[in-house]
Image (tube, rainbow, N blue to C red; front, side, top):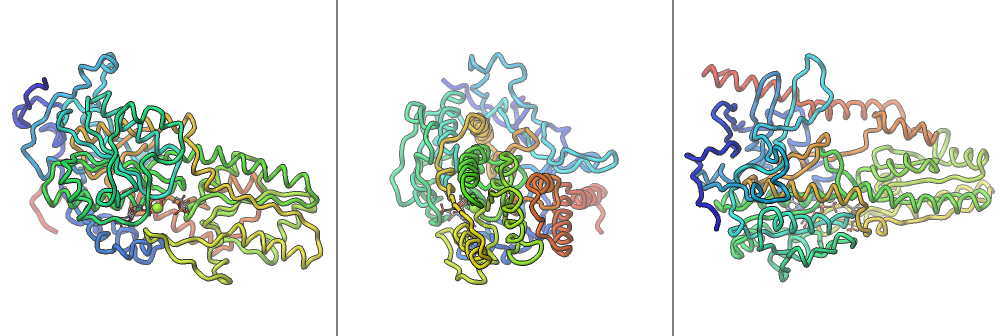
Length: 554
Ligand SMILES: Nc1ncnc2c1ncn2[C@@H]1O[C@H](COP(=O)(O)OP(=O)(O)OP(=O)(O)O)[C@@H](O)[C@H]1O
Ligand SMILES: O=P(O)(O)OC[C@H]1O[C@](O)(CO)[C@@H](O)[C@@H]1O
Ligand SMILES: [Mg+2]
């Protein structure tokens, strides 16, 4: 039988969050827009491609931004700021806590210092200057000595939303096994078909036995969907079913949806942890080191690039053209190109290119064919969309409001063929589109381990009562990140970064950049660096703290 609950007041709990008496008192800064004013994405995202994507649900997005408005910023010495995540006890202050059952688990009890220190945080910016501020930190993930849910009390659910990605089934498996093996939880529901499954589909019971083999399969055993996020119906379903831990696996849209669910759960005063596991094959989620499935995608892309290379070298003036995924962020194309070394040109959404004239793509292809007799081009699906739109009509949006892309691969094939026909030069172009084949495979070994750790860390967080957070690896350490930090901007390839320069030097392709584009890209990088550094906002936080400590006003 579980030991009786200890009241938060009299327990000698070394962890539970409003931490020890000596720890800095968390302050709630009412307006992060003010604190993070230099970060334009937070102000109004209606004009950004992503902002537009959510227009049908703008009111909900508005609510999600309230999560940011209640940012829990805890300042410390030398410009240190902890950007903390919400906790169920923030709005339900008298909840009992329980000893973590892991302490009696033979597998884990041998680990020295198994429970993480409650004061551990993970810094967002790993490279700092001697006199620079220590910067932004997130709460370190991991098991706490005391938890806010008894195993018998937990009724968890898992949902997967958005596009497929290698590793989804591994994450599902490891949430189920983590809950069961580490915490003795037995009630776990699978929500079918994404968010709409909460109110429009039957649920599936998930047990370690049922999920035992699923990591060997691609896709998600729960199914997924776009659109259909009806907050009220979803939270009604959570409430009616008595669900108290919600694990949401998905991309930026999904995490935004989870943020809204969290706000509504909080408004209703429910003891429910809402936790996200970021998923996107595009690797476009900010803050975290990389998203799961990305490694697998880059590895699988090699097969398509190899095929393109073989085709190209075997024909007269052979051109192998491979399209890879990457709606707004060209990471897969970038890394697959760097890994392969057979690629002569990589085109990504972040780096505009042009076809005609000196320094354009056609002249470069011509030169490559004259020099080598063949070439391989990798293009990310979101590349060149503006160019294509000059001659083709937009094809609308998907159910979630994401702009549907025009097929850059087909368009480019046609343009290249036309150009060389006009110039009376024989070419043999083979276009390979492996996009869905790459996305649908199971995760590789390294992603399997990554997914396992993410799943276990998210379970520890929910059991400890944290909510409104996404689990993420930052500088190699797992931590709990507030939803709004994951959704406020997009991770994109920086074309003024050393990594992109490495690619340019490996392919020898033209940079296609005029000075104006380079300057704009540098400014954007500067803005992003400031956000990551957080120095202006941290100074503001510290100023505010100093003012409130001295009782003064400014
Ligand atoms: N602002 C929002 N508020 C509430 N729900 C949202 C919001 N944005 C997206 N969603 C919901 O999240 C789900 C997934 O969104 P979307 O289809 O954009 O995929 P995603 O999670 O971004 O993943 P990916 O783009 O990597 O495939 C959809 O059901 C959508 O309705
Ligand atoms: O599954 P769908 O709706 O065709 O979406 C494809 C999109 O999903 C992603 O795989 C993930 O966002 C993108 O790379 C791609 O543009
Ligand atoms: Mg998305």
